[in-house]
Image (cartoon, helix red, strand yellow):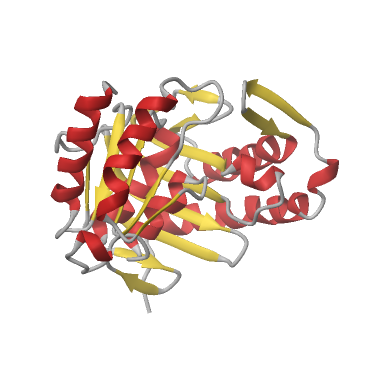
Length: 269
């Protein structure tokens, strides 16, 4: 059985408390009050309640750590070198449409590097977690990225830009460049779970443009600790805030990157 560190235990306890509220709200989704952040970008009372729960629990356990939260923004802590990076509800649009594919994402950043991460899918009770140098896990089982080595056998995930996001035509050119080479491409609407699924070997790779630190912080350490790679499209080590992200297994990561670079050059993305 996997032995969890104190940090992972703190993350898990906070996520489970927030998940109880999300599951209750998911059962009453038609009654939730919803407002718009952008043309197709929503925030609900469920997001806000989950974030308040996570903030309270994480701060209670580690009062000196800073915070970077999707809705609440950045808060400095007494310990300038450590902060929690939190997305209380990744997959808000899915949640609000009654689709049971959403997650809570929590990461710990220390001195600019993500050292631990957890992605919890409340529906199905899947808890993905990882800590630097200690491997990646799904609940209590060690996970590894897929060993598939042929693009023709690969299942990839991506995020398709929605209303209000620029350059839909350019993205479609990128999609068209990749589609003929792979077994399939999925768009499920949660970057945190896409990365967790790469770590668990369910996808061979994932790419997307324009993600925020809270979308990917926990997922990137999951992939790396599961034996995969997380870079930008040019093969540079991914840093939070980079304009694009590519995660993949060892045999196919570079090959997917070549396709994306060629498509990007053509599409001027």
